[in-house]
Length: 440
Image: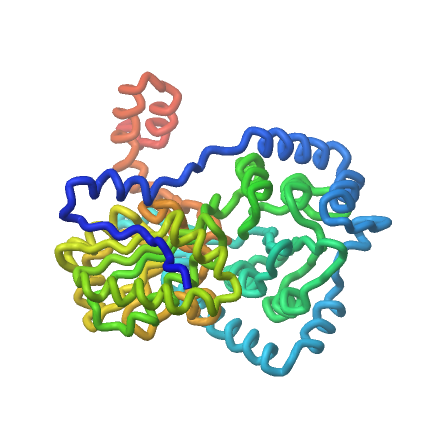
């Protein structure tokens, strides 16, 4: 057994800030070769439509088809996939979908409804909330398949009231993942196409003879998909540009160390650039977690990826106390934040920046990934400082409602005119003044 060389840092050491910044560093700079290739693909799809999509699908996914229509999955195929999976898988999908739907229905009631009020003079002010007409959800299908991503993207769109949900999923060499197709059936996807990569993003953004143009694209993907989403933003909406997956565990030393070690593994196994960090004021506990990492690593099927992630970007950090741990957590603004403490609600008020906060020793991040209910599409790379999880609100837009009464125009007109004259916009001012009652 070769020990896993995770960085051990101490906040009281003189070089802590330098080492801490080194751990957090991740270059989000784009690869110029990828950017140029994606730009060419998007331009080709915009120009040639279906023909370009077919060409790139054959080239990149080794999937030949006579037409894009032949790449569409029918509702019957999705239902057949649902019927073909095991009873245990069907039950898990349906249970997870039920919980995800219930959570987002509550979210809709809390922040997704229209509202209005009237001033004393009868002026009506408010906000009209309407769903997007059509959204596209991208589901990865290369190295791994993610039925959970189907649920997390399609269900909130459905709850928001989006009438048309178009899924794209690559199927290299024509290999379709039954769980992904079954999840699309359970989540109520309207249409599904077996296309992926930048060409799928381009087809959704621009529309082709077969693939309908959407208003927004959500869902994770590789560097080509991320680049394509970045480039089509403005023509369509996007959810976010996601970086490598992250977990930060705040531990007070009361949770079994093997639980915490496995929680760190749960993100490290995604890929070599994923980040797993432990913050704890107990030096002895940190050593016990390290011992469990070393003990458990050889039993993990993805141990090489986990080791590379932990040794490249992982850290076990000794803090002065839990208050300092919370402050450091806010600086990191992690995607997933576990408060593995006997008193999680004592520390939660101090935590301001995180994609999702998991409270208590029994709340493993993996439960949030699959079936707890809240969305697992979360901001990464410190963007939780200003971004939120994917939700019902991402599939809606808001219009302001203004209905000024005659009496209200008398109150607001002089104010607007004064400000408009100050900006040198006479027509603005007079449009307000024309509605004022004159003495004659």
